[in-house]
Length: 446
Ligand SMILES: [Zn+2]
Image (cartoon, rainbow, N blue to C red; front, side, top):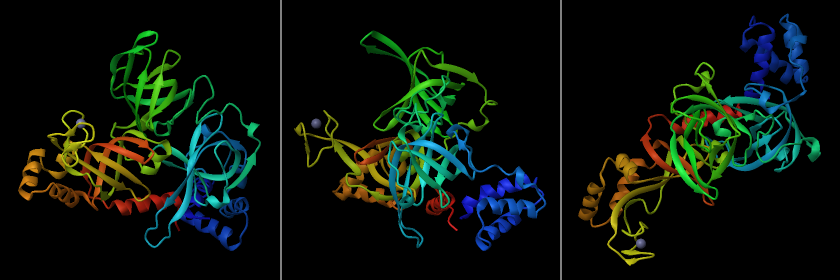
């Protein structure tokens, strides 16, 4: 049993012993029972509690099915009956002498809601989307305000009849009329009757033509402590920027992988204060992992840090057709033939956060700020050097193999995820070390 898996049990024993015994001592004793005496976890826990003079009956009863929405971070023995919504195999690249390994991650759901899961040993757990499974002895942790379920060494999986869970559609936290609560980072295409709690960042009123005449839609950005999402309200709830609300009975539709939260007349909006949602914090964006965004398929205004590992062809000084804005190659537009292209700057690169990679695209203004050069500067330098290659060389000098924090919308297509960068800045921290640490936290490397 690794450290990550044992930690919640140590906490539980510490709680039963009312904090009278140091956690390090409890951990030592517990490991002794498990690894030296080789008794079952339940027996080991009871023995440790008894040994320190506590009441073993005060320990949580193991087993007993739990609902997704009742699960908290740092739990040790979670049993859950759930439908498998997504199964994504993934290779974690080799690093620091550890070999590459396969993992599986995805989303499972029950009638109460959905939760992300990770499997570190996929060979032991065969599951496919649509399966209904009884998972036992999983453990959880909380990361960026979201609870994740891990199937570790002690976990077991049992296939159940498909009808043992009903009322689960798509990845929907379908349930009560109040709607299943979800974090912004969990919103995925097809979810129904979802409620989210957070802050309205912006509101814009638009009139859109529909089959039933012109409709007024209020749209903008919404955030909670896990991320941001675009919303559209098809009814006037008199939303105002900066107000904190719970929106119930919304639904999620994705566009190019980016989830969008929609709600209409049937929805309800409850006004709250920061006291009701203390986790919401300052409104500063928290960084997300690429893996986390891959799980969903896209993101709105996400912050990601990593190392630029490739600057792609077509980066630097380019020319665009004045009529259609397509990139001009060898003096000709694919549609309009020979044209006098207007100069533009862009960078296409690949960002690696230690777990996964993301294609990033920077437009002219972001590229100018990253290169600390204006478009005019670049045109001049290219003229002097008699080649535009010089600008790509400068871009490589400035960003290749360097850690960067990038921010923007993340879309997905058949080539994978792509961020349209709105801000990029070099970071001082050792991203690789950070990522390795994060991975170790997740995995509980010994
Ligand atoms: Zn053209």
